[in-house]
Image 1: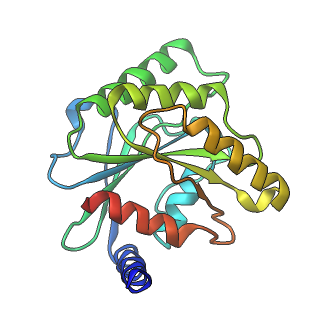
Image 2: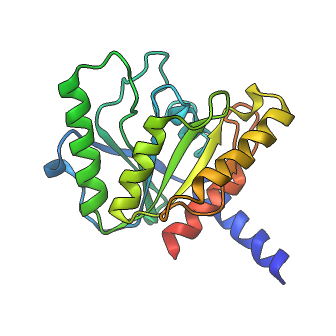
Image 3: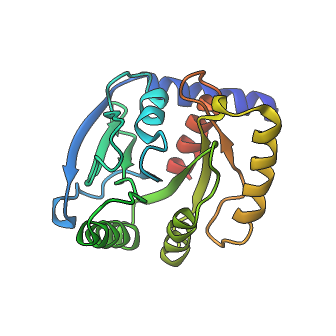
Length: 214
């Protein structure tokens, strides 16, 4: 029975993301946020972690979220409507960890993201993306602590898994699991994904739908 239920949930998630997905708006400040009328799932990650590519892979689009080789390009909260009728929103948060960014830009980023996380009642879960080639960095842990403090549940998602050897990926997964256990808001389930091969994408879609409907 569990296998049947899992299959049904996976198919429901596939159909949802195969349907209408549209860019709604960008919000450089909290006053520009959309109404809190549907569940939201937020995506966080260091600049160049593959966030835009993952959003495109999840939604089966090639250009829904811009991809760029220039780290730190996205400095606003970008909202995407999923489903018709509307079922949930994906929120692409500004990339963090850009070494060359001016201090005032970093400060503005922290205020925007922190205020969004603390004040958004429809935010059901965050996904913190970690580059499989590099693993968790201190700046990632800073964001994890921010999510802990805001009491926002989050999954860690290892991206670009096709870029590392399976043995190294397995070791990284175990190390990440140990690290996540130290954070009260970190969900115990960790995802391993590749936007290029599609590995882990279906499972992440299902987790997003589960979080939005829980």
